[in-house]
Length: 272
Length: 332
Image 1: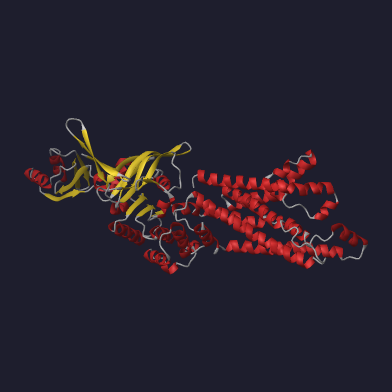
Image 2 (image 1 turned 180 degrees about the vertical axis):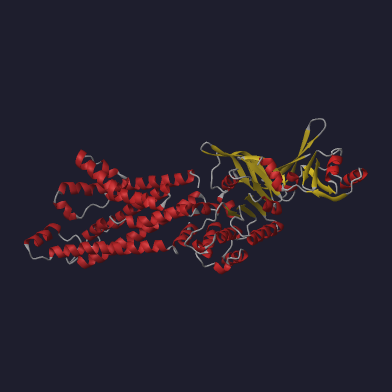
């Protein structure tokens, strides 16, 4: 196993595109949360009635323990940036035919896929650590209430990690199937940004069907509900969303198993 | 008497007697008792949709040889090498490396170059070879430098693979195959993209490795190269095995003697009555006399012509060229 990790590290450590995208990811997560925090602060600092109403309505979503969920929710929309890295790492192997060279040099197909699984795991871990750091800093800065429960919702670190790993696994699967980086990136971006959210919303609004929450990305998307202030508009629906999280943990784990089972099966079955 | 090699267990010596019964002696296995097969290919077939790339292919590759797999484009050479390296899955049949089914552990001990040089474009030669080392366990940093020197890439060892010329990429692929001095090399078109000096260097390298006991399996359509390097060949055509064996055996299915004299017409006329000649071919001022294998007697031909009043000014036993044999077998 260590040999596989070492080999993957040799492939990545001098890959400029990897470090560029990781740099962008590192900037994006704190940046997007800082912008939203700035806008929130800008709204609530107004002495006007509207400003005070917003403050009463929203509470402080950036203070502990709610900060864990708020930062996780907003950060989760940017998983397509690390997904670029995952798609590049897998499609590069096909572009350069290094996947077949790895096999020729003595890896089994299972070892090759294990290497890629480790890549996705490590990247999910890095992104989760980044989220946790951003949430910690934002929470510490914005928590003014003495005795606030700082770790009350820290379990969102685990939910964020699970969601990230699940969604990056789907990005990986698209890369493995398509094998061309540009096409795989376009498919993932289109599906992530447009197709799945719009289809799920359309089914919900038009046909009152919740089938959309079982779409591949929506399954894990439901792990992190919207910030608590959204619940003020429809408390019953929001509570249902919170209650569904535990079920989606199970659905996500099943989806992850199916995703990787399919990837290992596909790589084992097809010619290289 | 027949020797049947069972590399994993024992050697069976079967003695056939006149009475139609046979006795069997089972001897303890000895590594060097008889020539072992490095690779045994058994009834391998492979199709790409409706196109059958390999048809029930079977042959053995003996240890310590330079084995050339020849065939025109599309004959299935690369498909066969891809199957034995587990890049492609055979539809039917199997293969044995040293008498055992192929495994990743066996592949780690085999230096291979398949089709094109496959490396990470953004990495240098040295970093690419570190990956080869990391996966295969072959060699170390000193060995990496050594093979880069051997293929004359040491000066450019820190340059990115993407900056290399085709010939340099090929040299790096050969370096990767040589890393750790593997006892078996599988090389698919190893001289592809190399200049004449590079081709000669790789040829010398292969001959040198073979002298040290390495087994080299190479696919090529450069017949001249194969003839210079290979000790054994298999010729494929449209996925079928046309012939296989020792190069001399494959080539020498008949004797060819080339003769000439002042009066070529008289010589040609005289030779029509030479008993052994199976055919005569006039090529310019040379006459090629084809005779059954092993029957050519140069002194006999010389005396025959002299008795007919013809003085030969050229008399050479001509080894059949692999190229001629290849064209003959593949009907090209």
